[in-house]
Length: 113
Length: 227
Image 1 (cartoon, rainbow over the protein chains, first blue to last red):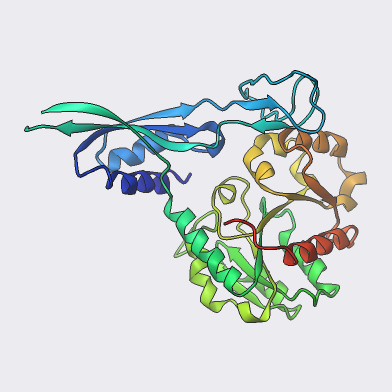
Image 2 (tube, rainbow over the protein chains, first blue to last red):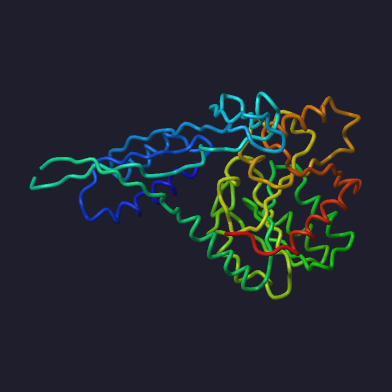
C-alpha cells in the first residue's frame, strides 16, 4: 500500500552506505505495518536492486497491564486473529514487536571488478 | 571483486514521516491542534461534524480540512455552518488516492486559516486501510464506525482500530432495525484495542454527539503531542 514510499526511504538510507555498490538489502518489516512483501520486492526490482524481504515476527503478548496474573511474563506470537488481550488474565497486552521497519544488513561489493 | 554482508541497522525515515513532522511544526507554531478523523465511506464523518459543529462550537474555534477523492460535496455541506472549510482533492483526473498523506496536507496549509482557529479537523478519505499508515501531522486520531458496517470490522482492520484513540460508533438510532450485535462489536474492539475510548452516537438524531464535542474541546486544550 505504501510500499513505494518505503522503497524510496530505504533507497535514500542506502545512499549513506559509503558509496559502495549494494547488491542485497535485508529488511525487517514488522507484521503490524500493513506492508505486503511481494509489493515491496516489486518496487525494489524497479529500483534494480536485489532484495530479500523478511516479515518480522510480531510478538505482541507480554502480559502486562492493569490486572496481570502474578508471574506471567510470557510472550506469544500474534496468530491469525488480532487478539491483543492476555489469554490467561484478559489484560491488555504490550506489543513488544511487529512495528519495526529496519534495514538489518546490506551486502556490498568490494575490491576491483 | 567480492561481496561482504555488513550489519547495518538503520530505521529509514520515510518521506511521509519527515513531511508530517514539518506539518506539525507549522501547526504548533500557530498553537493549533489537529485531529485526523477517519472511517469507511459512508460511516458518517461529515454528518457527525455537521451535527457537532451546528449545535454551536465557538470555543475552541474549529476549522475543517476536507479530504475527498473528488468534488466538494462534503465541504459544501460543512460550509453552510459558517465553519472555515478547506478542500483537498486527491484526484488529478479520474480516480485518485485513497488516503491523505502528509504532502497533500502540506499543500493545503497555506490555505488553512491557522491564525483564526484553535483546532483543525482533517476529514480523511473514506477507507479503513491506508489512512491508518500515513501520519499527516495530527495530534490525535479518531474514527467513526457505523452499525451497518458489521460487528466484525475491528478484527478485519486492526491497524485502523488500534491507531485511533477514540472510536465513535455511529447510527445507533438504527439499532432496533438491524441484526447488529453491539456487545459483539465492543468485544471485538476490546480484543483489538483494549481500553480504547468509545462513544455511541447518532449523527442523525444528535444522540451522544455532545460526547464527541467534549472530546474535541479536550483535544484543543492539550499540549502538543510528540510528532
